Image (cartoon, rainbow, N blue to C red; front, side, top):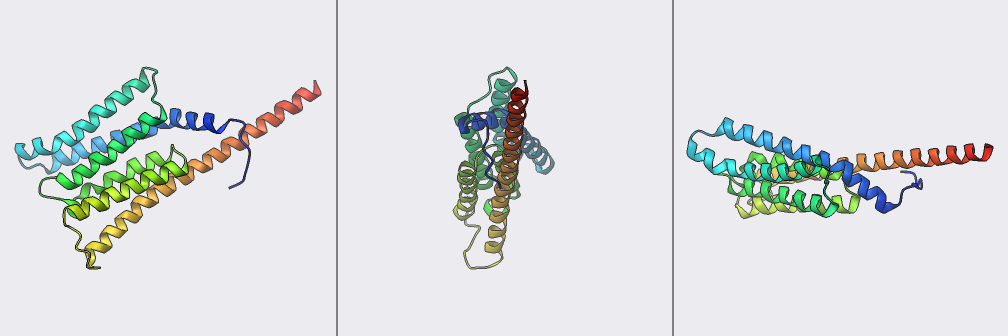
Length: 205
């Protein structure tokens, strides 16, 4: 990655990244909600199971309605609120992994919901924040598997499955942030080129 100096200050760049990027996080959250509700309706065999599992996604839906409504009404959220909302995503997904009736920890297939939220977050925030968030997701999922006793730590098949899933979550964060840095660099080049063109034009007048 080249060390191209950007016309915007670092603070301005971060604010613009969050302003335009929070829509990515919100739509990623909507995808998690839609996929989760579809799976709940598909797998629920009785009303009792439906009432036990649907509240997880209703909470996510309520959070995203509030955040999306603020954005649509012209009151976008700052970086702190976006970060806190994303942390809530991880907490709720982890709760699903731990508390889902009949399928806990490593046996719960809803671990896939970590991936879109981690990837979307990585598209918006800088590397340090992304690494911290991805690490939080990894620790949360690993902790959920340990807490539910579904990982025996005997170097068997379950341990290998857990490691592979954690690697995939980490890869989502890395790839998302790598693309983020590529776009940052492209914008820096474009800004620098525009500044040079304006200076050259002004000198000819």
